[in-house]
Length: 435
Image (cartoon, rainbow, N blue to C red):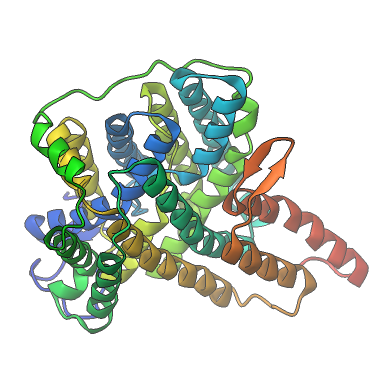
C-alpha cells in the first residue's frame, strides 16, 4: 500500500482545497513544495549554529535526518519539519561564556535535553492524553502557539540584527524584504493554482533575485559560492557532558516539550483533525531528533512554526513535502556548494518571509482558543491570554543570576507551570471544580 494517495490528478488541485496529510501531488510538484519548507527553515537553521559556534552543515544534516525520524515515529500522521531551535542561542551562549566550554560541551547539553524531552514523550504516551490535557489544556497550548508566533517574530528580528552586525556578509536589504513579504501575501490571498500553493517559494525567489539585481548580495557570499567544493563531509563533534553547562539549558526541556505540543495542536487546528493521540509520539520523535543532533554536533531541533505557516499558506499538509524537504536538506549537507548558494539569500529576504509565516502561526493559536470555546472572562484564562500577548509582543529578556532567558523561553515555561496552580486557586476560591 502506498504511503500517499495522489490528490486528484496530482497536477492542479482546485483552489481552496486542502492536500491532506496522507495525500501528495505529483513528485515534481511535491519536490517544489518541499523547497518551500527548506527555504522557510534554512535562514534560522543557518543562523542558530553560527551564533552558537556549531557547524552549519552538521545541523542541516541532523535537521533532515531528525525530520525523517520524527515522521517515522509519528507514523506519517503529523506533518512537520524540524529545524534548529532559536531558543538554544542564548542559553548556549551564556553557558559557553560562563564555563568556557567548547563545542563538545555545548552539544553534550543538547543531547541531554533531547533525552529528557524523549522521557516526557514516553510519560505522555504511557499515561495517556488525559495527562496532557491536565498539564496543557487548550488555553495553555493555544497560548504557547500564540507566544511562539509573536515571540519568535520579535526574536527573529533580534537574531537577524545580531547576524547583520556580527557577520558582515549578511545584509538586511530592506527593499528586498518588503518585496518578499508583498509577493507572499498577495499570492496567498489572490493567487490561483500553483501561484497560490507556491507563494512562499515565489516570494523568496522574487526577493532574492531583486536583491541580486540591486547589488544587495554581499560579494563575499558570491566568492564563497565560487570557491566552495561540490562535495564535502559535515564536521562531526563528539559530545561531552559538562557539569557547568547542563544546568543552564535544563529549562529548555519544558520549553521544547511545550512548543512541540503546540506544533501538533497547530497542525490539528489547521487540518480539523484530532491529533491528541499522536502527541506522545511527537514528543518522542522531537526528543530523539534533538538527541541525534547533539550526538553528531548539531543544535537542538524543534518542529518549526515557520513550516506550519508554509502549510497554512499553501494549503498543502502532505507529509510527502516534508520528506522531500528533509531528503534535500540531507543532500545539501554533503554539498558545501549548494549550502553556499542558499547562503546568498539576503537575511532581509529570509526575515520577511519568517515574519509573514509566524503571523499565520499566531492566528492558529487564536483559532485553538476559539475552537475550544475558552471563556476569556474566567480569571485564570484571562491571565494566560494577557500574559501571552504581553510577553509575545515585547519578548522581554529575563535575567536571573547571570542567566538570560528570552520571552519565548520563560513565557512558555511560565504558562505550563503556573496555569495549573492558578486554575486550582481560582476554582478553590469559587468553590467549584475545574471546567
